[in-house]
Length: 244
Image (cartoon, rainbow, N blue to C red; front, side, top):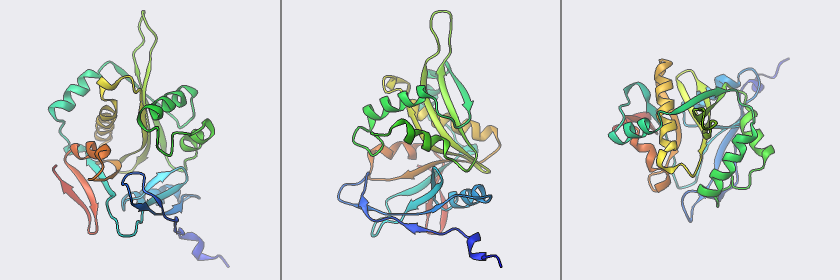
C-alpha cells in the first residue's frame, strides 16, 4: 500500500538566528524541500504565498513577534518607469543581454566576489567559495536561467561582463533569485536596470509579475523595491496593490 502522506510536502522551522537586516532581532524560517516530479508546481504554489527558492529549498520568514519582511511583486504590464528609470535605461542601452542555462562560469564567480567585497563584506555570503556558488546556481529543480549583461565588443575593446541575474521562470512571470554587478560601474545603476529588464521581459512573455523577494520598510537597503510601481505586497488577506 502506498503511503499517501509522502505526496505532501513536509515543513520545518529553523532555530532562531540573528536577523541580517534589523539589529537586535532574531529570524526564523519555515522551509520545505523541492523535489520529485511535483517540484515545479510546488514552487509555483509557494511563490504565490510568499516563499522564496534557494537551491532545492523553498522558505519564508516565520519570526516570532516580527512581520517586517513583506513579499513584493511588480505588476509588470501596468508598470510605468519614472524619469530617473528612463535615464538609467538610456544609460545602459549599449548593453547586450545573453540568456544562459544555470551553469557556473568562473567569470561570473569572480564578478560575484568583487560585488560581495564591495557591497556586502559583512554579509553571510561574503565567504562563498566556488563550490557553494555552483550549488546556488546549478542546484535547481525548476526552470532557471541566467541573464548576463555585457558591453558590446568592438574593434577597439572586447566585451565586458557587468552584471548577472539568476532568475526562475514562473507561469505568471519571473522571480529574481539573486543578482550582482560590477561595483565599479555605479553610475549605470545596474541593480535598477536589471529589474527594468526583467519587467520588460515579463511583459514580452505576456505574464504579469516580477517577484523581487522581501521588502523591509525599516531597511534602507531595500527602499528601491517600493519605487517599481504599481506593485503588490502580500498581507494576511493576500496580495494587495500599492501605488507608492
